[in-house]
Amino acid sequence: MNKLSKKSLHEAADWLIRQQEKPLTNSEQEQLQQWLQSSKDNQCAWQRAQHFINKVDTLPKEVAYAVLNRPDDATRRLHIGKLALLLASGPLIWGSYKAVNNQQWSADYRTAKGQQKQVTLPDGTQVKLNTATAFDITFDHQTRLLSLREGEIQVNTTTANAHLPTPFVVTTRDAVLSPLEANFTVRQYPDLTRLGVIEGLVKASPKLAQATPDHAISAGYQVELSRQTFLSRKALESNTTSWLNKMLAVHKMPLSQFALEVSRYHNGLLRVSPAIANMAISGAYPVQDLNMILNMLSHTYPIQINRHLGHYWVTIESA
Amino acid sequence: MPHNASHSVQHDVMHSLYANHHNWLYTWIRKRLDSQFDAADLTQDTFLRVHAKQNAATIKEPKAYLATIAKGLVCHFYRRRSLEQAYLELLATQPESFVISPEHEFIILQTLEEVDRLLNALPEQVKQVFLLSQIEGKKYQQIADEMQLSLATVKRYMKQAYVKCLILMGDDVFE
Image 1 (cartoon, one colour):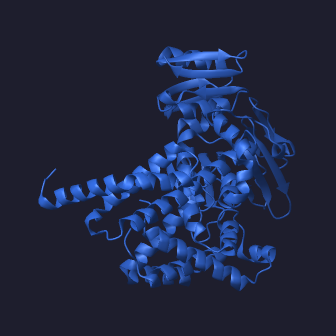
Image 2 (cartoon, rainbow over the protein chains, first blue to last red):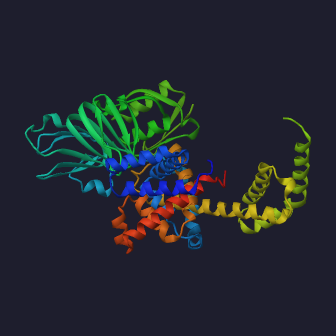
């Protein structure tokens, strides 16, 4: 990256701060545009600022704060024995996936790992919960709020009492979603939220984005959002809705990711050898039947399935 | 590869630099690390950096110059290691539902390292304010209340953090 004038960088920082404080008014938006157009350095500075913000924003909150805020090295040396152990066990960490944490147990509606269920909310809205899912509802005279804590849901507000004046709103860790008589799916990933619209229209906005207006996502599209920005928008993918039919429908998904998807539905440990982690997997698989999935995989792809500990520990390796 | 005069001068200088300085530099680095393999790697890295800069012929005080580069690399090495360890330690305390794919993990570690390097240049309190705002997603007023600072100070710190990071992003010290 080239050297930019300090003045441009200072001004870019000022704009970031103004943006975070409160949503920019129309005239402020115009000022920002004018500032951008007034010099090439300003544009580069703004681009660098956005790049920086996005970078920080990709970090999962759970680890980023503690890691970046870790104590000085001197105090850490005391722990070195414990660390050696952790380092040795490192590669085992990935691939395991457990359904339920404390947050989920206290939620209003929840499913355990491998379970799916359908509920009707007090206003008539129908919600389907996928595996290991939890949400709360708060219905008052101002709003009908559904807060997704964990997992994946399908919400159908077309069945709700149409005369209710209060707006229906779904929030996740990352996004605020306002459906207009819609049928849609929402999934909370560790670091982003995915919205897929099956019918109707859903207005979506990242929780912390204050400058961008919300986007209306229409039927047949899906978007991914982080807390601050839209990450992608594309046509609805089969994987977004296939769980409604208890299927996992994937197209060229890396095997390691496929294993994580499967692990959402099953207890135990499913590990993929790093050598074949990127193998592209396609097809539709019944989510409930782990044995059938593994058999289908081993018949289609050059892989070998090894089961240990009475099927609780499965490793997938190159054949 | 064109084999012109300046190339062979560069080559000769590198050669004698390596021959004359490799041993003491290795010993110097070895004293600061607990593994001979890491020390050998960092010694090699030091020479690679000099080579990449193509300025070996103009170095006046080779010992001081090499030691400065090596010192930077050793600091970087420790910082990176403490970061990786903090990361692993933390992962172990997360609920198992918190899963990161290996590909994603690689990117996260890289990004953490980069952001860590930027934040390391900030005074402690400024860094705190920045983390609360950008990672924890707190509002400026909330941060002011929590840290018992005025709103104006929080904003001044945020600005200081942004400016410093944006400037540092421009010089790729480790690239």
